[in-house]
Image (cartoon, rainbow, N blue to C red):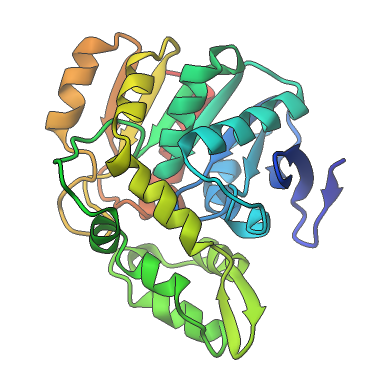
Length: 296
């Protein structure tokens, strides 16, 4: 049963293997949309998009297993596990098929969900993720994660003496600091939980390492799932990466062959965004919401 939180967001708990998955809902419109957050994020990463959807929509955003208020749910983790959890959310809300929007790793979860449960997904909106990336053989998953996620991994291992210290840690991040505002601060505050000596992230480091490493250990899962998609897919990309460098996370040369292979795939770049501001900034959130509500 849904209930109101102190911030006005309704929440509900959906039974899944091992316990209950926490789901936040924004809006009270008749059209339901499922939003899936990134690898070290939470449902709060969907707030800017929810704000742009309009009165006809309700956005349902779970905290994925090992994150947010679902952080006590046990493993195993992985894209299939998260996809099954998200399928349970759609069934519980009773509005299938549903538009599914995934951010970063959430886009990969969305792809697996749509491939394995096509009856639950009307179409996909993928923000800076979901497209299979070439993985050179012989890579160490932990080394790759440290290189790609950078401060995101470091924060999972750190106890911060105060909430302000946590915000200061993120203000030094070259991508997040660019579009700092109330949405970013609310997102970061939600990520904190009290622990001995101060505060730490709610996100399970074990979950992040398993989920991030899966693309290296089993790259075929995403490639096969993406190739199997039958629903329309709107891909939205940022021109700058996780560290705000002018190198997109998903470059043009990776997308081009899939545009020829999948007739239902569209692609657009949102100028003046990076991987984080595509989700948390106004320009990116408005574009994502427009693709959710307007289709291709």
